[in-house]
Length: 219
Image (cartoon, rainbow, N blue to C red; front, side, top):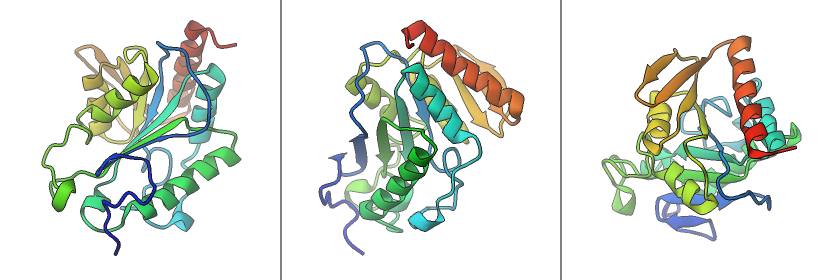
């Protein structure tokens, strides 16, 4: 296997951090964002995905992303990818899989604006070995990095994910609410977790996204 830390022309801000601007949309300073986990949230989680042919979108996720596109707010993927640190696959495999996920979304008229991926993990070796890297969820580093680059209003932003780590990352980044796939509602200090289990939950998420667009002045 090729060295997983080799940049190979990939958008690596550091050996274990992928930061990719997708498309050319420009957003006003102070915009909120829709943050999404990838595996298990956007695509069906196959466990350390390294085969683009296996990628399948989860039901209704394209509609959620398209709603954010209509609202004029950036859509940002924040994904842990410890399989790279563990040596299961490299950045080239990640690029192929992620490209396929974005392709499937585009086919459903849903567009992502930025992708951040963290490969650091305590089980890694070399520069990717890190027990608690600030970029790895539940740490908020990827969200903070995106906010710095796009000048986002994190308090008004939303996160959707399938793990408690996604919700914790959102809370620690200063977001006020998140949607937990197949999860349970919970209210904590300054942060509300809302479940995404049924059609009513889905409709609530779409309404929250539309409301952000209305406040941000999207037409």
